[in-house]
Length: 275
View 1 (cartoon, rainbow, N blue to C red):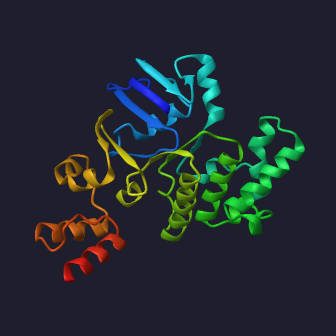
View 2 (cartoon, rainbow, N blue to C red):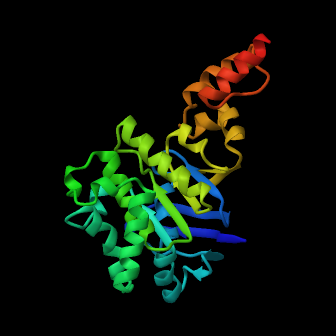
């Protein structure tokens, strides 16, 4: 079952000469993890905002998200409850005086009973490893802790889809690992995820990758196939994950039988080659 089903999706910013999206098609099934990549200006963030109901499509043949029609006022509003969106800068999404208050904020806005709010706050404190930080002021947290708190706040409200718009772009390596681990856990729990990123090693977490160029989808398939297409990567201004860059050179020299994408893949391939 497709939770996201859009076709012919178009969008133009006020005063812009060109459309940011030019007839994009995207289908994402229940429980699927899809990465969206592309150069700056390709339309990635615009697509994220539209899927989350934070902007209106210019036009579309079809724009259904979680059963809601994004072309209608009712559907546009309803999708904001079912789709959680996490942006680059967690400070723009943290509103509580403490971590615990921040996690409760969205739940209070949808008028859940106090007992249910308390239960869900306790759940996400544990789920995102935030219990020891519950009384901490968000501005005193590390970047990774702030982004995990923002993610926990988004998912404290029951969601069907999570859209992440370059959630690790402002983080150091340790913070990036924290957030990606949390996203991976949510994928394993069966949450439908759309991850917008420019980091090719993050793409490898996904089941499928969609590449945008100048507002159009130019690739839709497995991460391994995109990584192996150096011509397409070059045209999209995307690089290879470090392990894949080494692995591709080894593949061309027939030192390995299949393109390794991760460091673990590379070690296994080299060991197999020596066997």
